[in-house]
Amino acid sequence: MKIQKAGDNSQQYQIQNLTIQQGIDEKRAREIYDEKYSIAKQDFTEEALRIANERVKELEERLMPKMEAVNDGLKAFADPSFQLLLVDAQKAAAATERPVDYDLLSELLVHRIEKGNDRHIRTGIHKAVEIIEDISDEALLGLTIVHSVNTFMPIASDIKVALDILDDLFGKIMYAELPQDTDWIDQLDVLDAVRINQLGKFKTIKDYYVDSLKELLELGIRKESEEYYKVQEILAERKLPFSLIMKENSLNSNYVKVNVGGIENVDSLSFVRNINGTSLKIPFTLEQKNAVKSVFKLYSNDSKIKQELNNTFIEEWNKHSNLFKLKEWWEKLPYSFSVTSVGKVLAHANAQRCDKSLPSLN
Image (cartoon, rainbow, N blue to C red; front, side, top):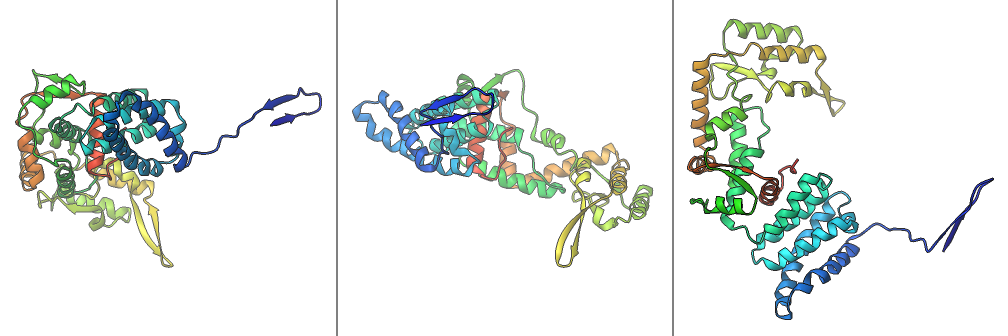
């Protein structure tokens, strides 16, 4: 085929054997998958091929729907870097008998598409694919729990709602008996998934979450106090209903708080109005937002009552069976460790396997 372009006083160019690249559909993606497997399976003997074929096919069936669900996911099959990772994943699938690993490998391959431009994350993904067949069930579970504590925070305006969200999450993530010895930590260190710090310990669950959820654990404004009546005046001046903006502190009924998760959420506040049968969001004016923000400055800082509130928080924590179980296990860990980029991508993939609603790793 020849295409010629000419113009006045211009040079002419001829392009021969021009191929117009078409998008990759599922059929072509599966063909590429098989082509790459023809490379991967060269390392297997005839006796091992039957088992390897079954396992690699299992990976394919779990991978393809996820690839189609990602925007332009199937296009990744044309990327040389992705193809090399795919061969490694196929080898890892062939080498492992654990069904969960096929899900993990598929999650890692999808993660490679979503975050592959970050070379730091890409390195972690490639290494995670390599160690999947070696990591024990206990090590994978322990790693996922620690990563989840460090990574996932609930979106809520009330602390009790936040605890319900966390309890549900860890109910999914703690899917097996929790490891009780330290062998799993040692294995993670050997596999470069963590770095052990035998001279330190993790913060207690109380200290960790009191800090992480500090905005939900603000005391607020004491009812019938001078500040309480001042807030009523501030809100009324900006035509903001007190009952809409303020709510009772669910851990101490003597106090009220702004009904948002924290001051940074004020800028997104809006009224919902029904106009001609259509619900419309009307953002707060700048003056209304500033009025609400000024309420936070009136919050009580009574250290004694705040400490009592923190103690009440842990009492509420212990009422949630999964959170109580997490706390008991966490505080028996003999020493702390940091999770490497390899450990993060592997743990995150496993967490997303357990709960599909979790966000992607940043």
